[in-house]
Image 1: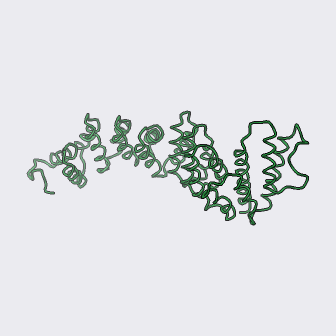
Image 2: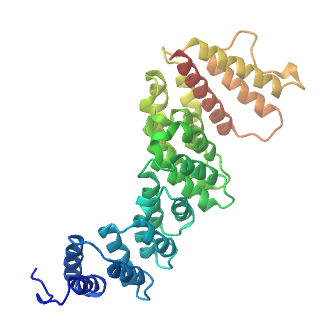
Image 3: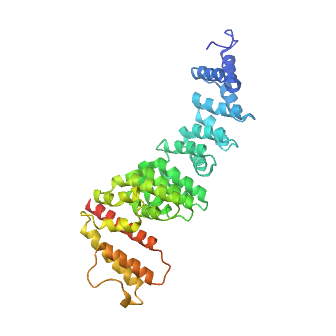
Length: 353
């Protein structure tokens, strides 16, 4: 593109100011971009910096947006720009807030900037602004621990939308999975369905690193509404590659078919590689549960005199629960038993390693 400005400008500063004015206000986006590129080749002086900072407070949204982006492209001194960005990041228009969040990213080591990006990540209504803030927070190792602590604390926030955003935000820090997975697993039991759904989707993104969440995900797989069930199936499928081969064989059919927890648990005890320690511990825990259910009427214990196998012990627990007079849901009882069975198996595999 040819130079639209006269070659005989009186001073270099006037030429730069004209370029900057063109970049900020020209309705032709090609001319505006050309002017910005020309400015990048020159040193931005005090007059140009002053004009840019004034433009960030302009009434016209387009001018504010352009000024923020030009500041980024020209890599202006943070001490001049950051105070203004901390104001524009709270602008009423989401496009201005998004541009400001992206512009603040290189300055995240500053305490005020870090807090401002955290606020956008957790409380902004625009998903694009939240994404921009999270990219800034996760793009550098600065303040990583403080960010994680804040997001983990936000999982306990009184407002469900904030808890959902915290779960999403934690997926940007997958290298810190060992600190994150326990809290996300706990969020699977949240009282609000959207939080449970967000936590389920978040765990899916951690893949095999979230192996410890399998028992709770199994509960979500067989309980709750259809949307959460679908999300749990995807999460379990993403996590299963990190499990042992026998455990994968046990749980894979429950993902591909609509088997209930009863069938999955029954098939698990047919696996030839099921560790005997897991089988024995599961039977022992089943007997303990039966004792609790039948403590008032021990003669009604549904356990046979012969030592039961794992599946028989599970069925005995369900019958005892039904006869106890308490609120009873057969599918829920089998789901709890299956989840506990998987948890015992995972603990055994961990000890073996």
